[in-house]
Structure formats: structure tokens, C-alpha cells
Length: 289
Image (tube, rainbow, N blue to C red; front, side):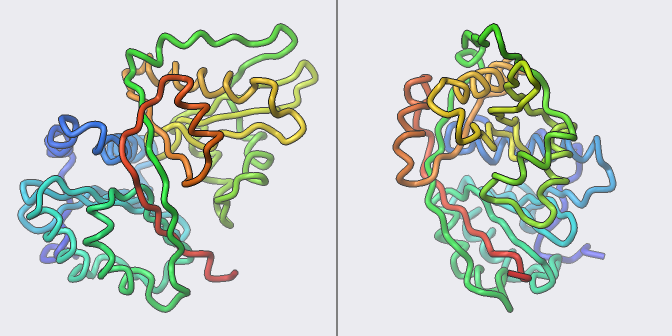
């Protein structure tokens, strides 16, 4: 169906070679590397999901990659390029591709673009976000810490509390306070509990007071402490627990912090996280809003 399209599917057997180009470019490429790595694992567990790794014509040797997942007509996609030729090829291929029914998507999210990738994709944004309000732009900072550092975290759980895995029955509460929730995000949270994992801190009465996830883009994400339980160190417990578990799996940990969130920046710097790169999120509201 897309044999002659400007964006071509990367065969499963060649994905390791794409990752091989990305790994030496850490930390700038860390989000692309782990997003692709997670999508591959996700596709194996949920083969019916529309997930793909794509490159411009000519394959990954063009120096660029585009990757996405789609569910319920909501598209989450991103891209990375590791050469000037790749940046240009990425722009050209997205302007020419016919793979995506852009105007039919209920929601589009393009997370964590590097500044150079965003600069070449700006001319493509009118095509991607056609027939809808102008996309919103968020400037974030990515921090990271290698696996051999996060495994050193000493996770201390108060005696009257327990640290445990997050289950399906917790998804509604988590989704209700997630600032990026959509009409389908509760199901996404449930799926991430299975495809990756989440950990929660519970009181003796079973009340969930803090949580964090190994999220779909291969990073620490969806970190939250309920409002009336803050400033007691609960967020630190779940963050260290998820990071350490990721590290024991051999995963370097990264996360993004919204511009101006100095409290979170200080928190993660205190844990040893270091600046990786500045990034840009591009997203649209639900069409029903």
C-alpha cells in the first residue's frame, strides 16, 4: 500500500542497526533511542497496535528516523536526525508522505523533538495540524542518568507504607489528575502498567498517595503525589524505585521537565541527574474541545 511512499518501513531485522546509530549520540539521542526500543517491545506484546519505525527513502543511512504509535485515531509520533542530510530528508519525506490521514486524527502529539529537528519540521506543521487549531508548543528540558548510577539508589519505604505495582484499578485515579489526559488516556495508562510498569506508594489502608511510571517513550514519566500528601518525600520514593528498577533492566533513565519548573529541576539534580538537551513538544487539543 505504501511501497512508493516518501516514508518507508524499517524491517524488524534492521531496527537494531538504527539503534546502533543512535546509541553513540547519547545523551542527545536518548529519547529517540528508548522511544524506539519501547515501541518495538510494545509491538511484540500488542501486535495489533499500529506501531512503526520509518525512514525517508534510502533507509536509515539517510540519517533520519520517524516513529509513531496510533490508537483510537490519536497519533503520537516523533523523529530524530543525526546528519544535515538526514534533517533535510526528514522534512522532505514528511511533506511528501501520504501515510497519515492528518485531518482525521482526534489528537496529535509530537513529543521531545530536539531543537534542530523542530527547526526543519516547522514548515511541515501546517500539513500535520491541518483543519484544526494551531498546535500548542511546550519547551522542556531533558535530564538523564545512566543505569549504573540509578541502581545505586537506596529506596527507603516508611514502615507504615508499602511500595507496590500499579494495577488496572488504579488507572482511573491516576488519569483523573494527569494534566495530559485525553478521552482515551485511561486505557493507555492501563496498557503501560502491562507493557512497561508503574509503581505506587500506598498507605496501610490501601490509599495510593504517589506514583511513577516507566512510560511509553522509554523514560520516567507520570510522576505524581496527591495534593494533601506532598512535601513528605513520597515522590522521591516512587521516583527512585522506578529508576532503580529501570537501571536493573539495563536502561539508562531520562525524563523531561517543563520550562520554568525549577522545583522539579532542583529535585532531579539533587538525585544526580544531568542535563541532556533542550526539547520541544508540539500537540493539539482534542477536536471535540
